[in-house]
Amino acid sequence: MTKFYHTTLLVYFLFSATLPAQQLPIFAQYRDGQSFFNPASISGNYFKYYQNVTAGLFYRSQWKQVKDAPRTGLADFEFYNEDIGIVFGGHLTLDQTGPTGFTGAYGRFAYAIDFNNELQLVAGLSAGLVQYQVDGADLQFYEQGDVAAENQTKFFPDFGLGAMLYYDERFYAGISIPQTFGLDLQFKNDANDFRIQRLRHYYFTGGAYVGFNNDSWLEPSFWLKYVPDGTLHLDANLKYEFSDLLWLGFGGSSSGAIQFEVGFFRYFGGEFSKSALFKLGYSYTQFNKTFGPEFGGANEIRLSYSWQY
Image (cartoon, rainbow, N blue to C red; front, side, top):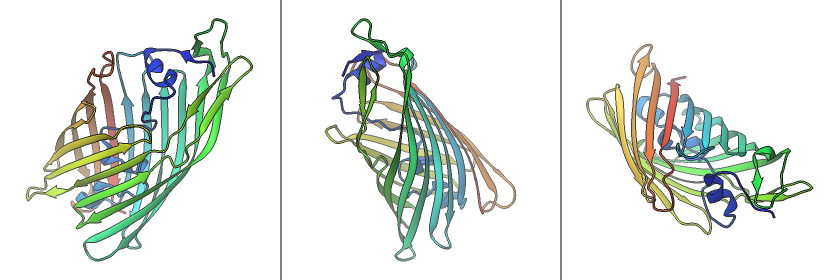
């Protein structure tokens, strides 16, 4: 396999074929869109505000000081029928890093089992089609004359598994494997070839919804990620929602990154439990410089609309 370079970013993550790393999109505001990595999750808007339908958008731009740094967009939809314990929905993911990118379209289905009035187990499955593509005209190889002038594309199916445990509609914990298939994708032409190895990811999440008499909510949460032959990575966050008006959040990770979050929400329609809910959030993540040069921070926007059906 001929090795190539494009930017500092690609040298770190594509040239280093043996470097274990997260391959799936990561969002700072994951609490408002866990369904993209755990098909068994139920939106917190249901437990806090009785909204059982949610549609949302994510956009994340990372490492602002690096050319062609990762940019990720995600659209998601969820419907939870509490009477029969069924969750269904899906998401569309777009991710681009330099000359490489992927697009994924997934549907998901989950079933909730109530053990008693307080304990609920939800098991979920996601299935979809993923497209990896490489813009050959933007690749530069170490050996002179090696030029991949054509674009190449690979399609393959993908599946995800997940389970969530909810207690008293206030505490939750979950485990998921969103990228079940681990395989090698080889892009090849007459002059050169390179390979992308997809690794299975294991995610663990947990948190709580702590309500106050003034309709405010405190939500501590964590997201633990593991990739085989890699290290564990932990995100921990604390979010406080002020009386149906706005929220503030703060968090950090085991890699030394620090995250700040702010957002607002507004109700439309009738009484509190039946009105629609609009939410807009922004987060900024600052990464440390332990492993290399300064890449710059990450900006993220989350927009969602929820209602009771």
